[in-house]
Amino acid sequence: MPNIKSAIKRVKTNEKRRALNASQKSALRSAVKTATTALESNDVETAQTAVKNASQKLDKAVTKGLIHKNAAARKKSRLAKKANALTAEKA
Image (cartoon, rainbow, N blue to C red):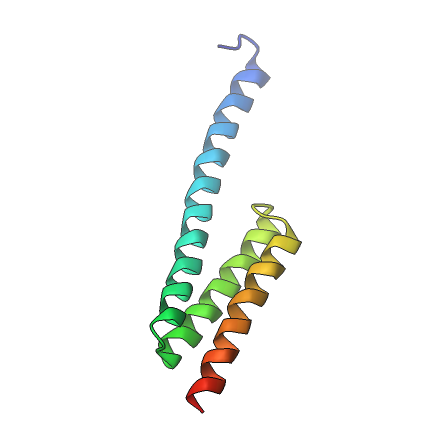
């Protein structure tokens, strides 16, 4: 355990940030998984809203520094590709 006041504060802030990052990353993973399952169930309306929500969460995660921007772009691209294939299939 640190003795210096600034080091004690750093430990506290690091713990707060770690907890916040973990919860946001979990919410991000849940959103992406929801979108994936909606796409697999072939429900166009639900899939489109889920993909939109997941894209927003991915963008927000990039601005917060949770994930790399290319990783977010890759995930968004794959979701959009599946969503477009689903809508083309239904039309």
